[in-house]
Length: 440
Image 1 (cartoon, helix red, strand yellow):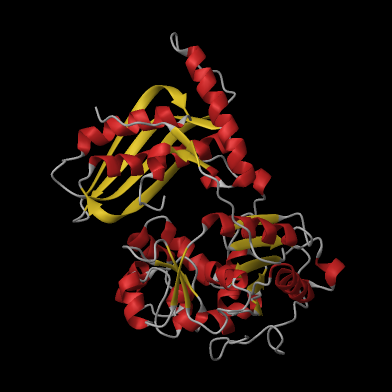
Image 2 (cartoon, rainbow, N blue to C red):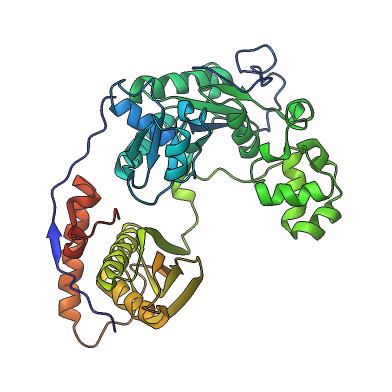
């Protein structure tokens, strides 16, 4: 069994968000043009959905925190600026050099040698996301945080209070800009799909409307990759049957698509026709998570047992923290190991009782890692997840021995979680992580 010292340490650290361009792809109408701003004749039964899509979010936050000193510079946000990593976000100046999210840092430096490379600050971005959604709730309580840089708003019952859908979008953009200094694009449509697509067509810093009646003229002529949910592999499969545009996909028989993609095939055809019945779910309406997990790509491939275990402990700590935040515990612990040649192994174990304490998750994960790791081979990536979730207050069998120790440990971690809630995730970490050079 792999052993490790899990003593805890406190490390003071604070982060402060400082203070609180209109180019669109050629041929794409803007909301302030005569062809794209009205929602007249919208049936009363139709929803009015806004998609707020932050522009180059991570990079924009860093530019705002720099008080203008980076406004004319190509900015790229990465996991680690010196070691193996990829670009998480690139501002629009960097994109002119061919840099995109997912571009390896080595490639990005070659394409944009004079660019500014910054290490990402997740706590800063989460804080900003929370503030953005607070602004969104000034316009409607029906807000779904879709991702850290995108939110959906159902303004069906509130648009009239702000002058209509388009005026609501304009005012929302202005409020986010005034409050946080950040640009965003707003898409408006009768469902989440069209609102999301509209936001992509309006980028950057725009406002775009897609109604059902606009689908044949504005959506169907576009390349198939412009449709949300269509990636490179799906587009390649569709190209084999002569489908290159969204309009062509809209006319493919459902049976043909089902034979190619299974049950999602007909759904792709519906999407191409602008049809989407997915509900907008506020935070209180979100379904329960089925698992909680984190993975991490090491800065260098390594066989160093202590380094690997430090990463494993950091992942277990993150998973435990998220489980406790959600009021969950889980019985099945899974470890993912990927070697330098990208060969991947997965091993899982179901425990007798649900766990959410870092120590318990680490004990199970270290045992699983010991079973699947060939120590002569260098590790590239590790992942840990916990599934089979139950609510913290669900009945469970108590341990016959060590209950007092576990109670003290639970209280201790509750205090640590409270510190993190107030001062940030890095205010308290396991001691081995202080000695690790990995940016967990």
